[in-house]
Length: 389
Image 1 (tube, helix red, strand yellow):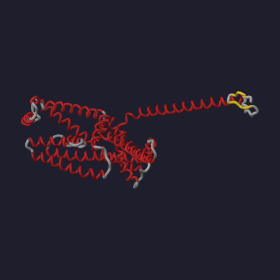
Image 2 (image 1 turned 180 degrees about the horizontal axis):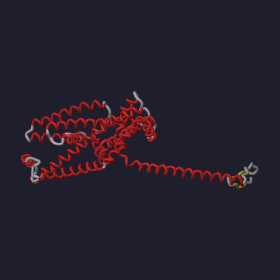
Image 3 (image 1 turned 45 degrees about the vertical axis):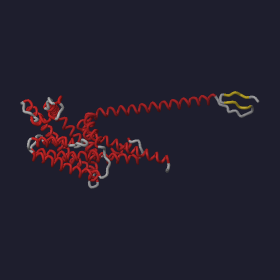
Image 4 (image 1 turned 120 degrees about the horizontal axis):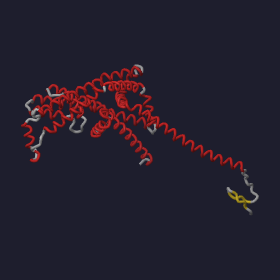
């Protein structure tokens, strides 16, 4: 049996050997080269498309960058008050609901908050200036009896400690910091009003187009629609239970603390109220860091009635309000751990400035909500793979 060596194999004699012409072989070769060139062209087109998209995104970021802070504030405020917009949207048109919500947030929240911060900054500057004047004039900030009592409980090597030194340094730093901030604000009033207008303008559109923005966000989450909905719901609950409730409790304690300082005649009541509200988020000790030393100071100087008044308002009424309001608003919702909430606020302030007071815990709560839903679905998939026990 004779065999004919061929490029594709061997065939026995007499078999029907397929004949491939040179033209056909050239055609197959050209087709393979065309497919290879097409694949290379597609890959090059994909790379160029992504490159152009990244370039356009970077250019848009550069355009929007000067206004990121007011845009971020508008997004945060819209997250908190979007349920109110939805309720109004059932009764009136979406445009008018957005207008009403924007005006309401502006008049009831933004303007009062700005006024309180300006008054608090002015009081802090005056108080720190008075402290520096008292120190320079030789008037002791801490009574001698109190200083001697403190020294008697200190180790021998610490009895010569100067208690006014840290107070002097703190007063100077606080005065210089607040003066620089307020001075910069007054110098850049035009920029402030431009950012304020952008905030309100963006807030209106975020309210009105919230559903479209939410649909776009869903497209960015690489999970099934059911998981996406659970993630968004969990994030909303965590943001409300952790951030909104914490800010509301801080506002209540700050208002009551400022009223107590005003009634007792202590200096800078608005600034101290802001400090009490901020310290209320600190785990364990909370706002007691502010009102307990104030009460001890009044009591040591013989003003026991005023000291008891501060104790009753800050330690009694504020604590009762906290214990009543917090469970009512939470309603079995999960929330961030107090320590994690405090760290997220401090980290947010360090990264974003004053905006970080809200956006820091908001981002942490949203990320934790997404992570919890993801872990829960992974555990459910693992249980399904194992089968019934």
